[in-house]
Image 1 (cartoon, rainbow, N blue to C red):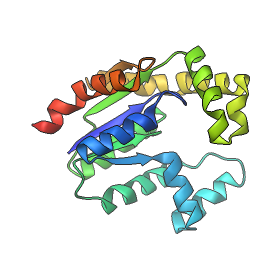
Image 2 (cartoon, rainbow, N blue to C red; image 1 turned 180 degrees about the vertical axis):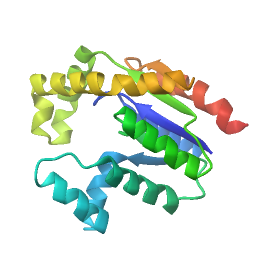
Image 3 (cartoon, rainbow, N blue to C red; image 1 turned 180 degrees about the horizontal axis):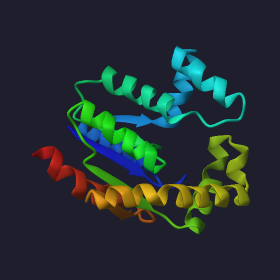
Amino acid sequence: MFNLILFGPPGSGKGTQASLLVKKHNFLHISTGDMFREELSRNTPLGQEARSYMDKGHLVPDEVTIAMLRKRVEQHPDVTGIIFDGFPRTDPQAADLNDLMREKGARINALILLDVDADTIVQRIIGRAATSGRADDLKEDIIRTRFDNFVNYTTPVFDFYHELGVAHRVDGRRSIAEVAEDIDAIVGPAVEN
C-alpha cells in the first residue's frame, strides 16, 4: 500500500491531482474537509462531537480528527493506497498519523508539496470564485491570510517528513499535466513494484 500526503495551500491543485491519482492507481482520497462535512451531515457520533467544538468556535481536537481518519481507512481495506489531503497540519498531527499507519502495518511513503506562490494562488482562487460560491474566494486579503497560515503552520510538517526522507516539492505553478507527470515520477515506480 502506498500512502501519500498531498500538501499545498488552498488553490494549489491538490483536489485535481488527487482525482488523477485516484483514477490511475485506485487510491482512496481522504479530504479532511469532505470528511468533516460528511460526518456532520450524517450526524454521526463523531460528527456530533466535532460540532460541539465547532459551534463554540474551537478547533476540533486532533483525537477526533484521527478517529474520523481511522474510520475512513478501516472502511476501505482493499485500496492500493491512500491520499491524505488537508491532514496533517501540525507536528502532533503528523505523529498521530504515523502512529495510525503503524497500527495498520503501513507508513507514509511520501509527502508531496505542490509549491505555488501567493500571487498565483490569489489569481487561481479569484478565478474559481465564479463557480465556488464562496464569498471569501473574492477577497484577496482573506486569500493571502489563508496562504500565510498554510505556510506558517504547515512548514514544520514538511520538515518533519523531510527528516524521514519522504518529502518532495513539485512546482505547482505549471500545467495540470506537467504537475501530474512530476507526481507520477514519485508515486508510479513505488506503486508498480
